[in-house]
Image (tube, one colour):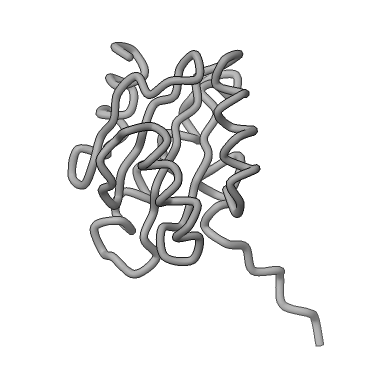
Length: 127
């Protein structure tokens, strides 16, 4: 009997990096000084966030050259990290939410139904 293929978390599909600790967030913030980063705050228990997840994954598959990078934090499982992001960036917490990080600072954000492939492209273009 063949072994079942490994199961992957959503982060493998929708993001380049999953944030588990504040140190992970520090690294993403530092990285955003070199390249744009989309920070996706995802609730694993919300159907709206599931739809946003699909849009982020589709955007990730369409981008060129791996830019912008995409990082994801699960807002329930990594609550302290999610709260630190809202506090340190002074961006009101929403879920789902995508924050564009550019030059170590928030340059724009989207939430809920605005998180679409086209919305993400526009955010990156105007941010």
